[in-house]
Length: 331
Image 1 (cartoon, rainbow, N blue to C red):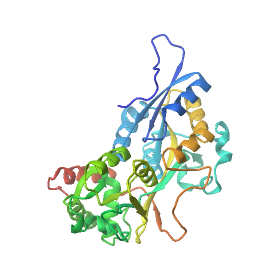
Image 2: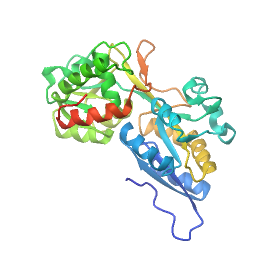
Image 3: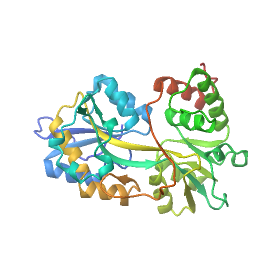
Image 4: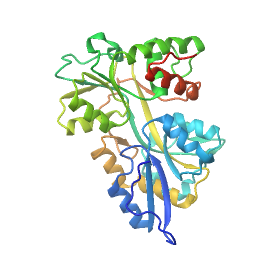
């Protein structure tokens, strides 16, 4: 487990501890120190690199291992369904008034009149291409399967998204809810993808290393413009497109787990992340959109497909592990 924050609660210390479960780039050292100073507390940040990992860690011990978690709207529904979250109290988050209008009334954030999450960061999952190897911008995500790029493709190591993009390539009407027959077709499609990739990555930083070490033509950008920003800072000559069939898009939110030891401190953290410093670092340092200012290179003509809960996340995860390992999936 990666820990951020130089100070942990010492034996006998009166300082409270906030336990944050988040994605890379969501809580950098400088910002964490600022929050610690403002509230005279210690913050322990643990990072996740996939929704599968997030679910395992957030749901462990009935949601008592962490206080606040960053989760996309699809996984949020899963946590609400399992009663692993407690409602957030808008009155304790005055910076909500700073959010842009589209993020202030999202139905997926509430259930039975109670609000369970606050939007924080967002991006789409487009396609990055190496201008030195791909002279014409790719028009479709199907290029990830193109034999021309065998051994030169980087794809994301995540079960839910991979089954969804495979279903989209197969023309399945609802890629978030697959029938048994649809799942069988998607498995075959993902085995074909596995045979075409150089590697499956977990973090944006890992992509930069692989790009510098190997001949990479195409990258499925699970972290969207955050990856674009990191690669450009590393000197990569790349382009970025939204495929014609559309790109999955995610909206990550802060939620408070049922077992949070200090809900008031968790609310204070959420309020802090909507302030100027955290919003600035998301855009300028991470290349991600925040919810308090306009951001991004997408246009109105780009088709964005917001994540939805899938038919069976656990089944997708089990099948994906077998596909990735090169074993025959048992449907």
